[in-house]
Image (cartoon, rainbow, N blue to C red; front, side):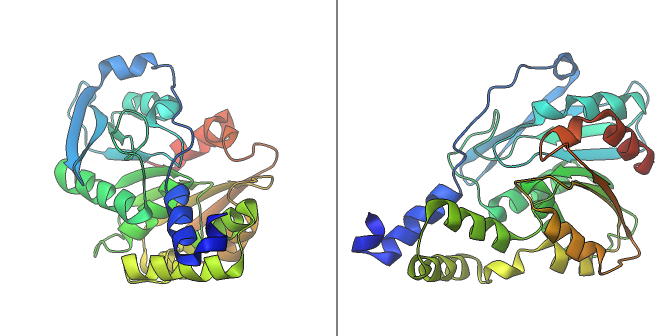
Length: 266
């Protein structure tokens, strides 16, 4: 209805909706969180909250776990427990507007800024696990790190292309091309980049780290087609694991997937 009055106003409303988690899920707190040190810091006036787990002996390796859109760190307890047992220091934070962190909206630049803050405050960090939207934010952060060759990261069903996410969003809301034009202008005005810039396929050209990319063929949130395009580019530092039938969310809790990730991050 708003688009009938003003395409620009409709685009602003659409961008707000695009950046707003519709579901802030309340996840039962796993026991491992009772063992973690609570951490927090301010970003854009809101508190970002998370945890740090340290093994009994001094850790030589530190890992950061990053969740996706409309998710939270409590869903990744299996990785926290696994890498704590291996003697890693583990860090995990809820993104703005997610989990225990404050805020109503999250944008990609804001999530990248959060990761940057964690890296600078609690790093150095050489190992990363990121799911969905978190995978895109992590990739765009890491490409800016000059010496990223020695790092290892796992991308689980990453949101490879922001443009794809926007395309699907506009199909879902049945918005017309004129609103899309204004929407794209808003992104350019606010970030200095076209939507196509926010792309893992572009960012990985600047990342020398060892990457394990795990994706399910039936994923209906982050399409496998975007992952296959990157696979076809034959980057020597990227290994792919494709599953079938796990979808977008079951994949990161699958026992075989967890095992493969543990084996990779050594």
